[in-house]
Image (cartoon, rainbow, N blue to C red; front, side, top):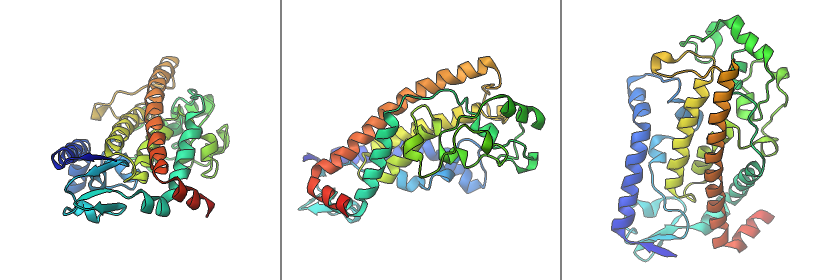
Length: 299
């Protein structure tokens, strides 16, 4: 157990808070003004994590924070005081959340072990508007790049290969039978693969779901990647967002498909690095108290 002096961990906590504040500034300002951004606000609506929770800094397992016993941190869940110091309480965490930790680790490891599939061409967003009246699409205040008929024709002309349940569940009813698979929540660990933008975006969800067992620097890294992926997702979507300075990737063309796959491959590699870091974070917790971990898994 290494000990961080108060000046060191205070500086790390402040740096993390500033980093998260910068990433969430636009969303927080729009929320006050009652405005909505179709790209940047998605992560803060789709995932149930408020900016205040994201900016809270956690060192992760194996680090003791000197002179923290008289700070609010000592009252946070899954922390414990050791004299004047505070540390992550891996025992209470495993007892309360050991099954969740194991589930997330298994999902991450099984996803990481599969080769990335790069043939979906982000057509999930197209399948979400397939054969819908223009006033019923999710982002109805933004126009489609093509006419409704032309948008439907793109879906008709291309195979749908979505592997992620949380994308597939928003397909329109006519689009669902066109998909090569039928993803369900129960099959997520069986189907998630590293080429999927949404599976990689979910690394942010996993890191927050595991807090405070995950170092907050990793949380911020997954959030940054998820924000980049959301932009790529919407660039390849059927929506015309050029008024926001967003140039489309025309995946309905061979050139657009090639451009998208190149980006998809690059982000899949970045996601695998973060996925490995999250798996290591899970293992660091169970390694601290293997007996408690084993007892929880037997329950």
